[in-house]
Amino acid sequence: MSTPSTRGPNWGRIAPTLVILGIMAMPPIILFPPMYFIGKHHDDQRIFLRNYRAPWDMEAFSFISMSYAAESQEYNDVVFVVDSALRGGLNTRQFEQETGLKAYNLGCVRWLGVRGFTQILDAYLKSHPKPRLVVLGVHPMEFGIDNFVSPEVLEVRARFLWCFGSGTEDMRPHNSFLYHVRQGFKYMYGLLIGGFGHFADEPINKRGDTFRKFQHELSKQRGFGPIPDTRKGPKPIRDKVSTVDPFVVSDEQKTDFSALIRLTANHRVDLLIRFVPFGGEAAEHSPRLRAFAMELESQSPTIVVGRPEVLLYDPAVFVDGIHLDAKGIEKFTTFTAAEVKTMLARRVAQGPRLSSSEK
Amino acid sequence: MGREGFNKYLKNRFYRVAAILVTMHYVCFAFMFFSSGVSGAGQILGIVGRSIRSWPTTTVRQYPGFFGWALMLLVPLLILVSFYQDAILSRINQFGHRMTARNRSLYLTVLLKTVFIAFMLIILWGLEKEPEIAYMRF
Image (cartoon, rainbow over all chains, first blue to last red; front, top):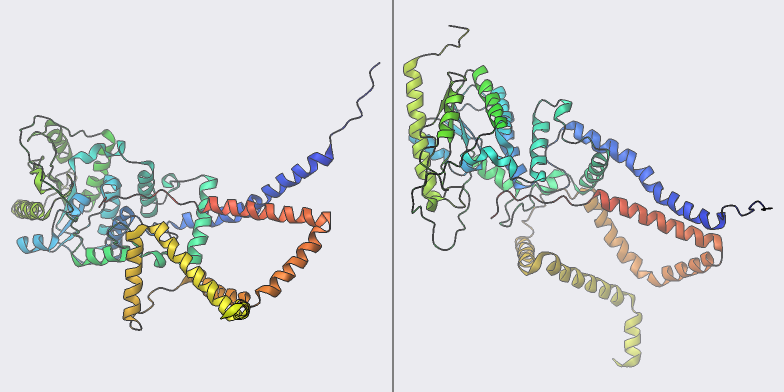
């Protein structure tokens, strides 16, 4: 006959373990809910720049462009909505001297993509008098860029679109509980340390540039910010003619372009799309870019895509393969000034254009 | 100075506080080289040197923030505490003896330490640095 076991759980041993586990669980139970609400509330406010660290250069350039677009009310004849290749490749003052037109370079960063540029242009058109021409400058290799960027970069882009876009829930980049908790901690730390003002003078890069310095310099040069030439050694040269067509346009990019075209068409603003100079290996003519250009032009009579689509420049005039040096800037600015003057003269000669419904 | 003079010097509160301050500054100075490298430390020292040379024309542009004010209050408080270091340490010792005399107090100490560590770990997790993005690599 078996005797029933009288040995129950050894509470003398289990209890301390449970107490320790309970104690370890206590801090999250106490801290997580308030931090979540703080983080979520801060996210709801849609403030782009973080109050707990110096902005990254990408954030700084995007924010400075957006600030001018949304807060200034200045009139400009020509507005450049561009990536960094043109922010540092088109000298706005030189352009103004060569054309006699008032211009502003709303250059930000290519990682924002055409959707980001559309957001900046939308803000500009809402708060400024209508310009005579909007120039959209994009690097032709930008179309497949999403395949090469890190998740952190995509996060900044998503945050930019959330903060400056429509603000609908589908645009919110983060919904995770732990993300908001962590943001709550960081936001509180930022508050204690003095907020964004504390970081505006902190170095962003190795050269010691700060947010305020960027802001001051870009404002002084009407958005133009050349890239420092730190090249050493012999400059590369183009020694052979290529037959490669490296430019691929995805369907997503086409949709993004269409949204920007609709925006300019709704405001009845002329749009010139200019693919910026290319220093890599490519043929002088790209059937893919030509087809894309014609597709864009067919969407609205207010659009012109600059020809030739592929502007092949000597690699020696590029600082880093994408951004132009002083010689390249001068050459490209003169080219763009002539292109803009020709386009505006043609528009004047054509007279006012009517949309299909008005006809 | 002699043995007697040296003992007198060791017991002097003023010298002791001054020695602590000098040691702390030396440690901070050395840490600067570890955290920023030789060139980074050189840059920091250059900025400090320029601000000292241009003082008092150097204006304080930034509001120090709550954290800054807290530090400003904490430093004189620590200096004051170091004047009464012996008395404070002896009180802590007495308290420690009393605490360890009873099991319940020992448990309480362990629990408080656990809570403190748990809070610290969570705050460290919350404030973890985001991976930095350098768009312009120059």
